[in-house]
Amino acid sequence: MKKTKLLHEVRAVKSKKELENIIRAQRISEQVLSDTLKILKIGITEVEVDKFIKKSFIKYGVSILSFTPIVSFGKNTANIHHTPGKSKLKIGDMMMFDIGCTMNHYCSDMTRTYFFRKINKRQEKIYLTVLEAQEKVLNKIKNGERRAKVLDKTAREFLSKKFGASKFLHGLGHGVGTVIHEWPNLKKGSEDILPIGCVMTVEPGLYFKNFGGVRIEDMILITKNGYKNLTKVSKSVESAILK
Ligand SMILES: [Mn+2]
Image 1 (tube, helix red, strand yellow):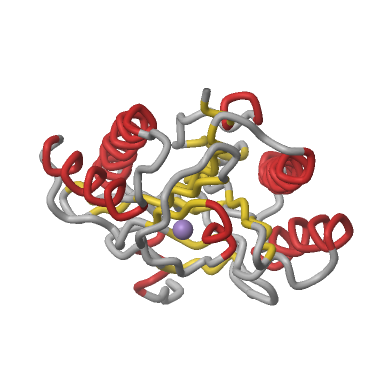
Image 2: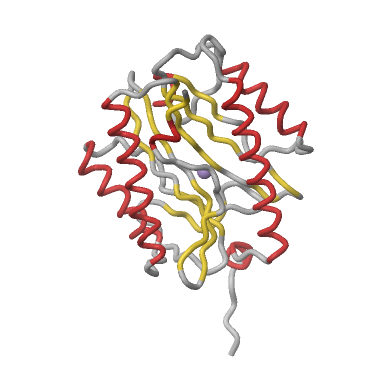
């Protein structure tokens, strides 16, 4: 007898057309991010950058965003729900951009963290640790791990070992589709199993009050043989230091 499925399980698996929309949305976000990095200068405010991002999406023909962009400078990067404000960019600041837009109502989602002109030892250590956590998770997926809680634990245990518990304040990721956070849930204790054909974010982070935070978020497609990274923006520490 045929087994019933739940709608969210069916929706998680993307058709070719759906995937194309997600990828197109992502490419536009990448273009906007690249344009944004070019306008950064000493004294520019988060609000100004946020306005530029929104204007750029319009310029590329997109008027519906997946969520309100997160633009944060300096210590504000430690606040995962930061609203862009009047903070001005300074040399040595960390900067976080979490942006996504929609194409025919399909969402994209990406976060990159940068360092303005220079990086200090602590910032570098945090950045490299988050990057390594993401690589560990991606490696597990490549080797066939599909259990959400195991993947979350991989990142969480590694980050806790390096910086103590409670510095990674959110889930590791989520499904992406016509809503920005859809099933499956890639978070602590989740019983979800990632199906082949679903699009997920993998977004470990570390946050230090009065210092700053780093989050690196890629969007991936779960495939039969592992995954395909749909995010094409480099994330090496060298590329994260904006000269
Ligand atoms: Mn996300």
